[in-house]
Image (cartoon, rainbow, N blue to C red; front, top):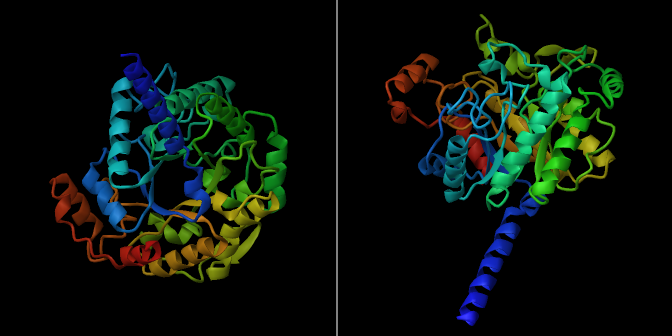
Length: 394
């Protein structure tokens, strides 16, 4: 009996050790990884994630913030006053992560909302600045991540915690999006040590997470909605060696966005000109590479390998005639520098604008009608843009 107890104890210990090792996925990021964003209004099943894995994707950037929960804000209860994780919501999230894991996908968990920073689309279209102006909400956001990391830390497929999608502490404080390098650095310097100092906030959250989870990689977006040039204005890297630094790429937004498709004559790429860094820039392959390159140049300056940089979102409207050219230029820029990427987005259930599996012949109205009728499975999925991405992921 004593021997059996010793054997069982050793087996349990071995299982715990194996689990801890499995959850340490920093090595996953040592080689460029390619994946997709999953930003759905409802949780999905294993078949959905298998379809994503079949494209060649190895990881998924997953948000839960759109889902209907037990209270106003999924998982956190209420972003106005965080009191702890909602157990029923946590079970739903774990089931979703398990579904992705069953398809062989690594998962990056990426909330759109934190306490004091409710996602604008769930906040009456208003930007929620409380996280960047009130230390009490930074404390609540930190506690939320401590609780979530403690709950997920042993899951073998969690590849990173992405602290907040597209933070913008600059927005309500006189920052200039895509300003000159001098303007971006001056703003960052002026905010140093305050509540709008994004690096200070991240350092606070990371230190707290590490008390409950010392190994899971942590991903952070640069400021101004994950602009690579805002990341490049940071004076130094964060004090943790398991970090991933993310940017999003939709520039030139005047051409890649839905607003462009509503113009009588949509702007074209290459050639569209926008105000950028204090001057007019005509966007082409080189301009795209220069914009993206700001993040990689910053990493090199701070002795970080390019595999610590992630193009965590990028995309363009699928019916825009220049979308394929643009996607190729973005991917060339990221891959030539040795970074990771995840396209936006895979089979989003409430928006068709960047669902690259859909061919251009599928009009937006048909997508929404079929989804409302519960006939989304009948949508054709032979879009050429997905072929482009699939070829890159093989």
